[in-house]
Length: 449
Image (cartoon, rainbow, N blue to C red; front, side, top):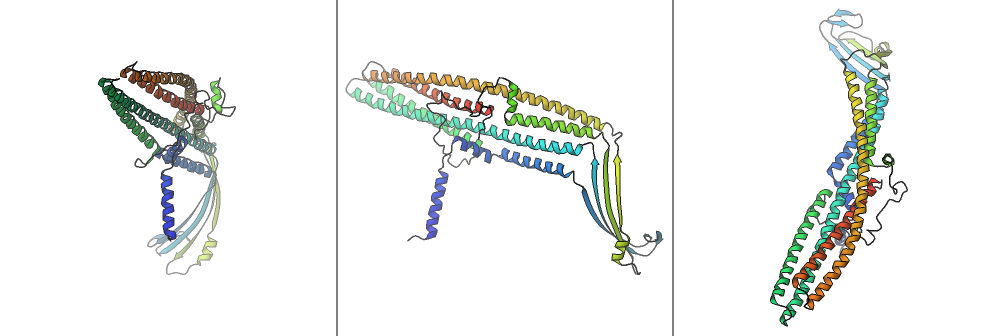
């Protein structure tokens, strides 16, 4: 009977093999890429830095408290702290103090700094999401390329099987005198061309798969297995994917309506405007006077060495002092630094507003372009479906005529090559339609992941 340890190791090995053989869908590939991309991880760390900056801006409203302890040993000529006269007696001094300060008014700079930090945090969050979406779209496109070349490899293998069957038929017909040796040679050449095409398409598939692994940051030595795709279905040309919400399922007539969408690029640009506006307010606040209050308590202990002195506890009580003060700082002239800062921040605000308007226009163009591409590839897919059906009929009839001696081997090669090209173009149109639908839905507000 097997021991429990051996059974556990077998189960663990079997589980590991199953995990390694797990297949990934397009969404799985996009999620894997987002989770393992180095730039995304750097963006997450940068976002954590923005959270620390927000915490620091919130902490500026709290009082600043500090405490100090000092010890001093004097020997030779010094001032006696009790009589304030010079003495040559060595003394030991020990002081303690606690103080707190709080700015009361600073031209609303702290408030604007906190609001700017919050807006910067939101901006970073949307920038990180935009970065993730951009990577996900690249992975989806690479995934479609892998599907395309998997399809072309499969088509090339099917064509080779057909060519091999035709070659065998031609050899049999040549033995009975119905076909010539030239026809046999022509079919052998066609079979060799099909072998070459399979090799070429397999190399293209390997390159596309490597590109997908690199985008996903997937280990290149591991096998990447893709799940059977649902991107290509019979209903794809006529029933494209559309958002289910009323907000994202309609066509936008007014470009300003795109502002209501949760597009990360637009949201990040809008938050950048808020940050620039707060920075301008901070710069203007430097022209205002600042008011602060402080308070503290101090005490000390003093002892003349080799002489009797009051005890430590009594001195701490007798020398204890408390104070409270307020200060007002009025800026008068700082070599035009504040005015220059205001001018820079005002220009940064205008630049941010222009960038927001530019991204709005770009989003409108990208959305319209994606919708036009969807419509175009939808029509092309329907047309290529009809062409594939017609080429399939033509190829079958040409092959039948060749068997009956009514057509040549060149006619068979031409018809099969035309059918293969039509099928590959149909596959390309279907995948491009799926990609453009993904883009159009994304620009309408449908999340990628």
